[in-house]
Image (cartoon, rainbow, N blue to C red; front, side, top):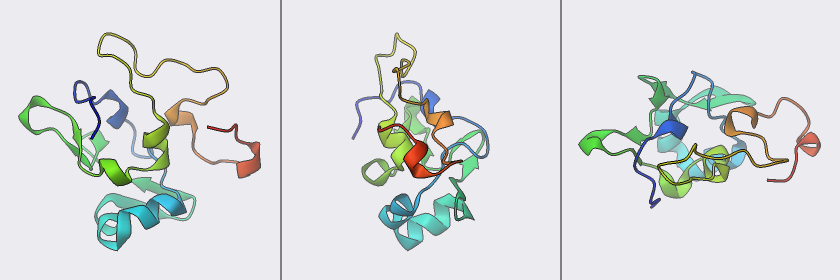
Length: 112
């Protein structure tokens, strides 16, 4: 489980915020996918509710990912930082999570 339970900023976004790839779908399994994923093919995303990922548990004043061990690739590459910093910082050559959506051939993407 992640040490970061402080802000949940990385889990809040637009309806089409966290793209779900084939590998992510397999990791979530049929039950998880049917509950948490919307769309099909390259137009497949985590379901959002109330402006945040449906897998985020807001109870107890903490921000806990209920699928942390099988979270999507975009979530795994999102580097957490301390609560007093912008999370994550810009990393040269690595797109921000909101820019990781595959809109071109995978060979066009930088290694992450």
